[in-house]
Image 1 (cartoon, rainbow, N blue to C red):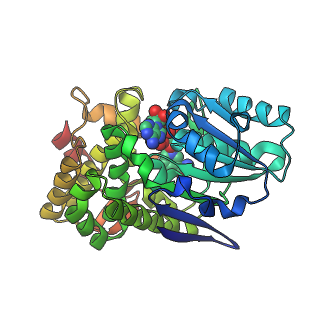
Image 2: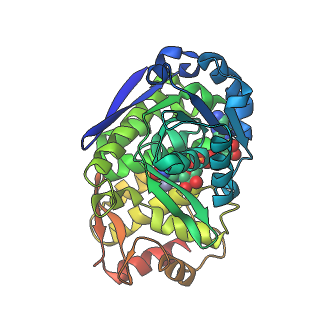
Length: 357
Ligand code: NAD
Ligand code: ZN
């Protein structure tokens, strides 16, 4: 078990990472003598709720189980959570636990931010993506028909308890999708870590506890360091979007249904690496290293068939990271060193788009 303390201004919270934490009451020390409610989804709940209820000596009345999936990340679901808390006279001193992936974490965190002007919440992420990404940084939200994560709040958890045993039931595509974000951290901030991922990828795919713990710990540490410099996303935090501008274009093109987020990001990482070579920054060998790692992780390296450079240009124009009408892209100066660039050479972008479509 490893603990990472995330320091944000005058506050800090622990992220505990290890195997079997859900059945260890000591991991939930912050919750002693507090009223607790749990929000989960059908998939995570079915598998892990019995253990958590037993550990915390709670009953099924203390739980709200929502249907699973991104389509449920709505204001309507948030309202359901808030109504349920009010109906059960949940006090301001209560703690809300989010048991599930990023959808549940984002939504329960958002409700914790709103309920009676803010109550404590604890994240118990059960997908690799939520363990390395969405549980760190304090962004919470629901989607709106006009856009993803459009209604939200910044609200930091009291603690994060990442039990890697939960990854054993994760569908392989979801695991790979989380690995895309792990690879992203290596590419954008830590070349040594990227090398370690190359050497330990097979162990992670085989769910080796030590390798997963290290990967999650380092990913959270890198994310937390960047977030600490920029909690409200005005500058450096944008670097975390390496691969995401291309990725979001793919997600929009495919209607947010066929492709998982991490799969679209994986292609985006390949495209960002390629464009960084077109800019004369990253060596061709290093870009190929990234692509081959992504491929070994079982992730796609090319956009969907039929997607054209024009599709990319149009859809990238709608991305949130567009500043004053100009696309801003995160690119690599070299492996482990990223820059947010608005004045890149258009020719490099076009060359990459042609190369990949
Ligand atoms: P998810 O929560 O939808 O989980 C993916 C699927 O796995 C779901 O069907 C879920 O029910 C199921 N599942 C969860 N745990 C499981 C387990 N242990 N075994 C088997 N199945 C399990 O998706 P996700 O990929 O975890 O998170 C994606 C969400 O996270 C998106 O809404 C995204 O916007 C958000 N996100 C937020 C941040 C942030 O900073 N707040 C960062 C990245 C992503
Ligand atoms: Zn992402």
